[in-house]
Amino acid sequence: MKSITYKGQRGVFLLEALIGIIIFSIGILTMIALQTTAIAVQADAQYRIEAANLADRMLGEIALNVDRTTPATVQASLANFAHRTGGALNSCNYTGAISADPLVAAWATAINTTATTRLPGSAPTMQQVLVNTGNFNQVIITICWQSPADRAPRRHSLVSYVN
Image (cartoon, rainbow, N blue to C red; front, side, top):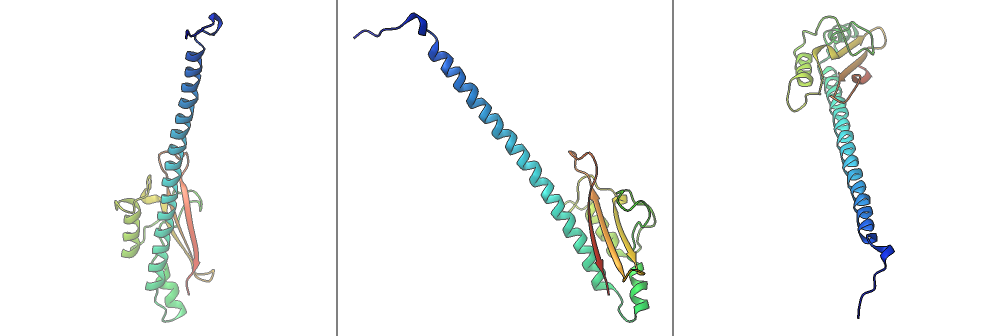
């Protein structure tokens, strides 16, 4: 049997194949874009978790090492943990004296230089420990970092009361 071809249908199969390839390519490109977004979101979540863990670690060190002999010794020992208390509260560019307490120094090193816990774009002026003994021994621990994709620094703050 002879195959019958019509002159008006020449190239239709090629056109259908090209349209199918275009649709397939758009689908693959969309999947790649979704994967890239998922990786970026996962990295951001990891940095947030690490910042929360580091803030909780510092609060634990403060709670364990406060001298609770009298209310006056609690306030005096809390004051030793104060770190970079100057600068605007939400600026992520803190000024002031660094704490002489070795626990605070180790904490700041973990944020800025330790390979396993370092936050991207962090600097020594981006961490703060505020102690307000006049407000029921309030402690505010703030950690800032800035990943390459961020336009502005990200911030995690932990507020607690130590008695």
